[in-house]
Image (cartoon, rainbow, N blue to C red):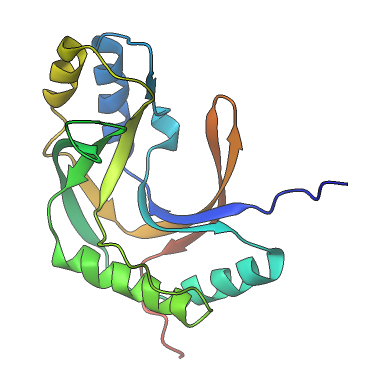
Length: 190
């Protein structure tokens, strides 16, 4: 008997509703192309850390550790689009955010809380972004050009909370379910 999959967890910052609305309008204005899978506006997020399949005991430990992270609210600004792994063989269309030291300090706090609970630090450099679309096959040059010209820069992102999500894969894409929300604030004991 096949055992049910454990939830795939990730930690993320949600964009404001205004960015979701601007993205949805932009998406409707761009040409459709086979092999181009747009993200659902309701599912947009900036991933701080992907944890993968996590059992219930570990998930409870993670929730407790994340609840101890103290941070002051801060703002970021979107900066433009790009492709992973690059322009030659694009697989992901992303929206970046301006470099912000406060985000890097906050990300380090998340990593420290996770390391204290047995999650090793990531070896790759943190590249903050919001995934807009996945590219499953080569796109026509005019479509790639239209994607490069997307204008979503200058959108503000207020970071006054972060979230733990569960992600379930299905044929139409991943479905993200909110597990817990962690607001900004001081977590020191009274």
